Length: 174
Image (cartoon, rainbow, N blue to C red; front, side):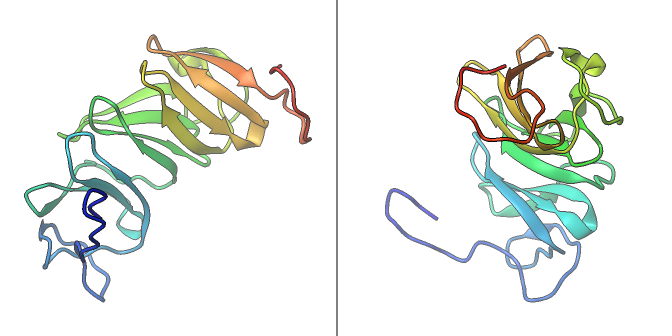
């Protein structure tokens, strides 16, 4: 999709599932469930059944960026500095994947719970959304804890909205 010209073009894929990197016309996917644009151009996609994050480059080449299986991705967003941030439903970590495939845990651990804190001390339950502001702070929709959490550039996690109860009420946070 070219927003400047309002042109939509078939980008990649065939009508068969598979796991094949390469030129757009030959690439195969098996269950694309998340897609986000890259600040450097191109797209990142989560290929669910192949358990991989893959990038479609501006050069027309599809390649796998994640180096190991990702079993539980439930949120993915482009990083302002390139790469993607992603989180899991039951994995409960927010991670960054660089364009070269280096994965770094930003916050949380492979353990559910609720705790504000620094990096790996923080706990999440059912991450369903992530976004990054222009200052590089991450906001995480922590569905299982009914809260919106902020991860600052120093990896400190704090709750910015919600008190853990399932309810609807406007207000100024917790």
